[in-house]
Length: 161
Image 1 (cartoon, rainbow, N blue to C red):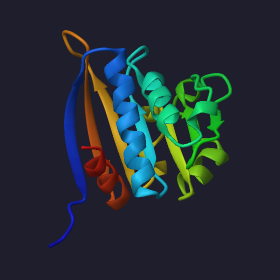
Image 2 (cartoon, rainbow, N blue to C red):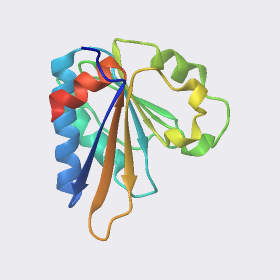
Image 3 (cartoon, helix red, strand yellow):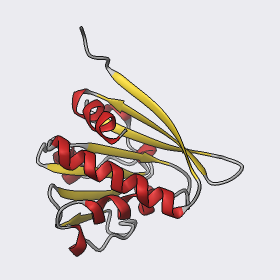
Image 4 (tube, rainbow, N blue to C red):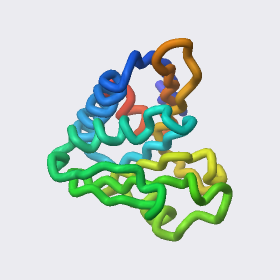
């Protein structure tokens, strides 16, 4: 039996606590799978992208020492988690060529790479294996679509749910 190339799931998040809990759930799956994972985040300002990263980083081993904030001004934050997490924010780079460090991290299987505002990164630079989280408008709370593309991302999403 051939593995599917992608796996999709839609969730409704009622509030900030639900967003943090989703991040924690993903962290447990990342820790279980134990391979480099690329998590790409797409959503409007205030959608909950950095909140999700806070929940995720805090739940990883070493996460108690991670001080998660949006890396909008310095573009990247590194968190002392296991695996180490590289958190990028591309908001200020709207459609510019990506920084070399981002491209290097996207190829690094030892690092959890999280990219906010991934819609500003040309798809030709996207990795082959990634978990894409897209926030959608909802009348209350948030709706989020999770799409896993590639073997490691599919394993991670299945482990989380």
